[in-house]
Image (tube, rainbow, N blue to C red; front, side):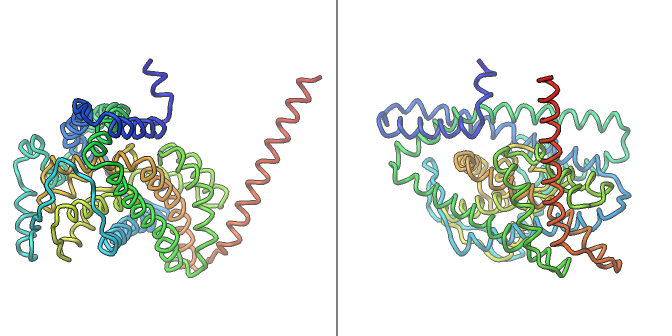
Length: 436
C-alpha cells in the first residue's frame, strides 16, 4: 500500500490534496475535525525542524576540509555571491510587490518589528547566545545556527568515526523529515480545507499572487541577474551559455525536483562543454547542496510576506540582515526536498515572529510548493553548471587563454547530436543481431 502511495509523484499527490481540501471546504465546511489533519502535519514539522537544522549545520561544518585546487575558489565565490544576490533580489521584489499570506489562525493586527540598528543587533546577539538546549526545545533558530556552527567547527579536529556518527544522525533525522513530507498531501487537505471553509474560494487567490511573486523573481534572477554575473566574469555574451544551461539542466531539474538527481546530467553537460573533470567532479556535487539562490529567494519572500501579513514595518538594516541570514542558512537546503521551507522559521525569528506562526507559513509553502519547488530546483541546478563553466572560462581569460563561449556551447550541442547518433547506431546493431 505504501509503495503504491509513494510511487505517485509528490507533486501529483499534493495536487490531489489541494483539490480534495478545496472540495471539502466548499461542500462540507462544518466538518471542522478535518483541520486536525493539517494541525498534525504542522506540529510534526514544528517538532522535528529544529533538530534537523541543528544536525545539518553540525554535519556540514564538521566535514569541511581545506585545500581546494583547480577552479574551485572562483566557483565557491560565484556560488556564495549568487546566493546572496538572489536573496537581495527577492527582498527587493517583496518591497515592490507586497503580498499577504492566508493565515486563518493568526491575527493580522499590526505588530512592530525591531527598529534601529542598535535594537536589531541587541536582539540578534541575545537570541544568538540563548541556551542551546532551550533553543532546540523552543525552536529558537538563531541560537541553533550559532551553536551548531561553533560545535561543528570544533568537530573538525575529531576522528572520522565521530564525524561519521554525526553524519549518520543527520541522515536519520533527514529520513524522518522525508517521511513527514511524504505524508504532506494529507496535511495539505487539512490546511486547504481550513483556508477555504473560513475565507472562501477567493481566499485562495492569495496563493496565486504569492506564486507569481516567487516564480517571477526566480525567472528574473535566472534570465537577468545570473547572466549579468557571467558577463562580468567572462566579458562575453552570457546568453548562449545561460540559455543552454537552463534548457539542458533546468528543464530536467524542474520535473525531478531534485538537485541531487540532476548531478549526473550536469556532469555529462560539463563534459560536453569541455570543462576540466578535476573541477566539475567536485563543483557539481558541491553545487547541488551549496548553490542555493532559489532557496534563499523562497526564504526571503515567504518571510517578508509574513511580516506584511502581520502589518510589520521592516527597516532597511533588518532587510539587509535577512539577505545575509537567508543566503547563509540556504546553503545545504537544496539537497533536501522542501528544505528551504523548513528554514523559514529561522528567518522569521529575526523579526520576533513566533514559531507557531512561522510553521503555518511553512504549511503555505508546501501548498505553493507544487510550482515553487520545481522552479527553485531548476534555477539552482542550472546555475550549478552555469557557474562551474563561468569560473573556468574566467580563470582561463585571466591566464591569457580566452575561450569563445558561444563556440563551446555550439560544440556541446554537436557532441549531443553525435552521442544520439551513436546510441541510434548501437540500437540498430542490436536489433539486426536479434533478427539474425
